[in-house]
Image (cartoon, rainbow, N blue to C red; front, side, top):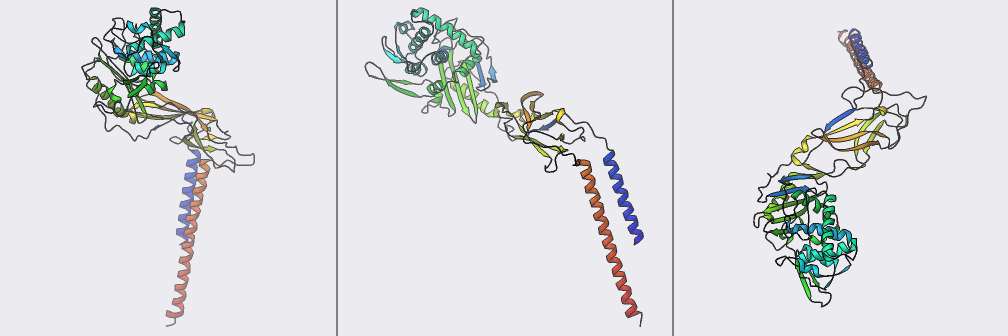
Length: 473
């Protein structure tokens, strides 16, 4: 048995020596500066819709937050906007006027064509700008549009402007503001959109103008109002305006529960036009259809909006304070535990992403080489060398889609990690593993020695029994 014990112990010691040499002699690769991991995807777009078949000559769907185009059909072709023009008129009124101002209606309302849509204003009538906006956007009043144009132009340029000068100056303001909103291919010559060959836009331009208008709460409130009841200031006679946008009218067959506005339009040359907005699951969309077939603008718009909600999702890829990774630390103080969580330092904007592309998004961390330990083994997380101070930048986390960075933020240390003192010895990963191995070898050896001791005792007992009982017979 001693012979077997010797062989076993020699084997264990040889194994220990071999593993120790392997660990200590194994090359330490330089730290990888990038770690790439697939993100976890829960929504892969199982219920995707195909792009809608539209009757409109021109159409576009954009994300309101980012202005990202989600769908387009001849969206940059020049078209007549009809009364969707009034979105821009309302935007200028809100930005340059005061809602409580009382405006006196002038001869400008007699300058609109006889077949115009009207809010039924009267010359000499006194009305608040707030009420004028409802008459403009709900009843699509061309008379309200001209009244607003003269009021805003005189407020900005001076009361001495004639009606003609004021209307012309307001058109200049419209074109300037449209370009500021991102409309690059439009030209506006009046405040209401009644047909003029020189009055044109594109579906994309109208979406950009609407996006600017939707930044104002008062605009959003107006375009979601179904009906409004007010009264003439002078006579007190009641007046009622009803929204022409069927998507927001609950008693309409075209009602769309997610709709939040915005404006209809029609002329013989422009055809049926509709600018729509809708919100669902954190996603805010704007759709524009220009020159749709008769009464098809509603279905076209709902089809665009449903396509957007079904095929795209709004998500925040990086959120400030979230823990992105936890790294081991080397040469840390004895009273520390040697593990450092890293958090995202800044928020990123919500991202609108096509659902079918979600599985293709990759997460990559670019480490700051200066804060890493001198070496790291391949296929392992990098290690940080103490000391580390709180909020110290250790790298940058990025999300990439098909090689393009779509979100990024700095990674910082969540806490301080002190370095070990002069009298402390660093506990490296290799030494820690070696210690465990030695302990295991000694435990096995001890177990074998114990088993051997028990076996020897049993043999002695059997021999004693034999000598004292059987041997005497």
